Image 1: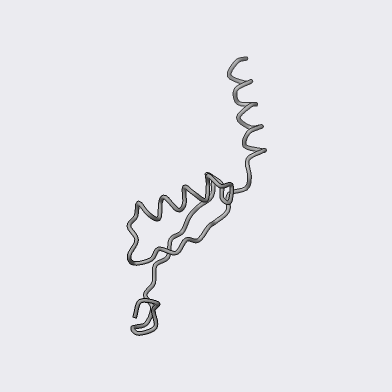
Image 2 (image 1 turned 45 degrees about the horizontal axis):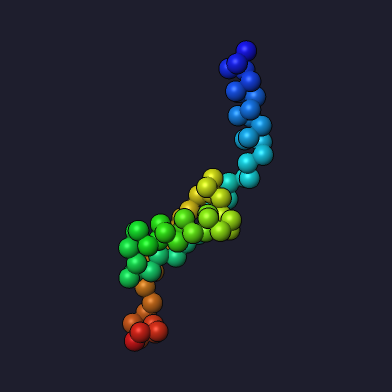
Length: 70
């Protein structure tokens, strides 16, 4: 009986959980993995994203001479 109550509670929590979304994060070349991970954790902490979301990181290079530091 106790186990069935636990399963019922788990189902209720799953039903109330927000639907996972796919989030896209830009990873600049001068950042480390820890820096990107910190930005993702900050989004979750601020409520902008959920722990259930999937995060996809992208990195890219600007063409030479077109960046803010060139």
